[in-house]
Amino acid sequence: MLGLTGLLACRQHVEPASGPPPVPPPCGGFDWPVGPPNASGYYDAQPFGGLEAHLGEDWNGNGGGDSDLGDPVFAIADGEVSSARHEGEGWGNVVRVVHRCGDGGEYESLYAHLDVIAVELGAAIGRGTPLGAIGTADGRYLAHLHLELRTRVGAPLGRGYGTSSDHVAPSTFIAANRP
Ligand SMILES: [Zn+2]
Image 1 (tube, helix red, strand yellow):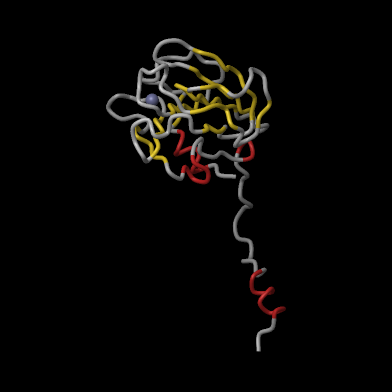
Image 2 (cartoon, helix red, strand yellow; image 1 turned 180 degrees about the vertical axis):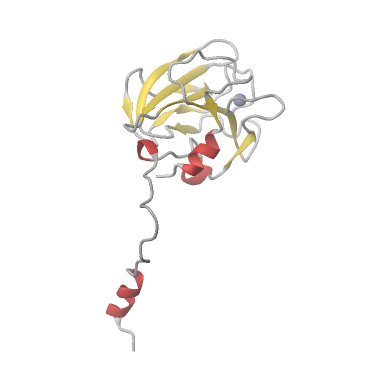
């Protein structure tokens, strides 16, 4: 007869350690910028790279069109707001966040085409902090979030497409660096 104590012991059973201890993810871990948890309700309509050399990912609501207009956009990791302003035609409102990870690693995430901006320059934020809302870049596109993740902090805005050794595929990086 397995009593309650036995059940608890089973649940707390831990496999013997093997190999080196896991390396903690930088900055306490990264998460997707929409639809917590795990980008639920959203899809990446234009992945990183490809024929057009997209330097980011375009996150859209599963409902398509402007169904995601006004939905919240969240910081993908702990950091500091390094820019929060309108960047002109094609970009609309853009928030940039610098992630200094303490292990020497530095990253900058960029959230573009926002309908509204909800944070101020210099603000210290945590992973999951709302940064603003999904927008259309002043009516130029159907609503979506253009997300970039850069390994060089403070680089010029660029134009969202092209070849760059300073950009990484956000989803690939996030998936490999979960909290
Ligand atoms: Zn894009």
